[in-house]
Image 1 (spheres, helix red, strand yellow):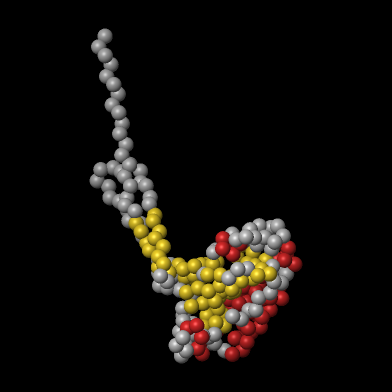
Image 2 (cartoon, helix red, strand yellow):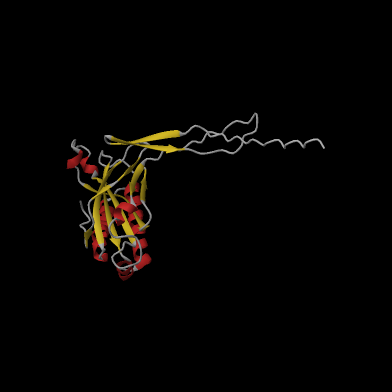
Length: 224
């Protein structure tokens, strides 16, 4: 009996497109982000698809940094949620050449976040001729958050600040700015478990990280 032929071996080739790199420069340091993807078998005559990543301009407040040493959760002493407020340079200080001498008291943004979520502030406006900002973070454990009024109160604070900021952009009336300062001054009365002050600089097409001071217990002056 003649020997049976061996079955032809199937050969699969996997093609991997070249990796692409984006470099984010923050001050004198640079962070290279490498992303690689693998494609399945390609048929003859097909062409690859180019993946385009839109650049993001903004500042990120890292949740991991804020909760370091305390944890994220519902236990006493753990960060449960946090309210972040971004302040830019006072518009009247636009003529001040030294950015470090500008007053950072112009409300630009405010948001409420879960402990595991990074605070994302995208395309912040230049304020007072500066792209350097102060970020105030008010952090609450679960018990403190509930005692202060929970979602209803904190969502209300964030929404009111957002509406007031929109009014400033629309007309910039003195009465609106007075209302903003009153709203900011009331935040410490919510008795946050921890507070911290952070700084951040915004660069075109870069998502930079805010640098924060160590957490301290209790109230934080809403002004820089």
